[in-house]
Amino acid sequence: MISVYRSGTSILHRLPPGLKLIGFIGTSLVIAVTTTHLLEVVAAATFVMTGYAAAGLGARALTSQILAVKWVIVFMLVPQLLFLSALDAVSNTARVVLILVLAALFTMTTRIPDLLDAAERAASPLRRVGIRPESVALLLGLSITSIPVIAGFAATVRDAQRARGISAHRVTFAVPLLIMSLKHADDLADAVNARGIES
Image: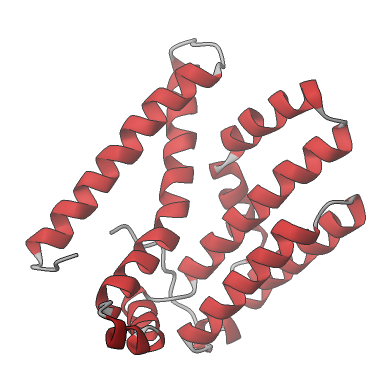
């Protein structure tokens, strides 16, 4: 598992991981459902920027996370501009980008072991119906921490294509990104199996 945790003493670093997880999920749902107009997009972006400031990460960290998903932005925005209004295309793309950047903030301020422990405690009632809380916690941790990793893969693929003079195209972008993501999933599965964790 690739972790982007950055140590710190900010209020976000000190918050209980369970509370942060609930906040991340709730905020992501709110962004996904409500950011349909320009003012709502601006309000959501302001909230995310405030989160980075509260974590002591600043504008540089926020900018680096946005740059990491720049080709995701391009490949989401351009096709939508062909079929939707500019405002709708920007709003739809902004929702996804804000959630990706928010996921990065969560992983930068939360230690993975702490996240897994909190998720395992929250899922403990599921043991009564035959579901292992350890598996639920592992799945949740892998899902959240994989978001910034895959976003980084997207940036790597597009930068490599630009260096080779390959024009932007959805197929030539998606295929290597899919291969890298599947390889990452295989590596994670091998790491989980090596530690004797069963599904």
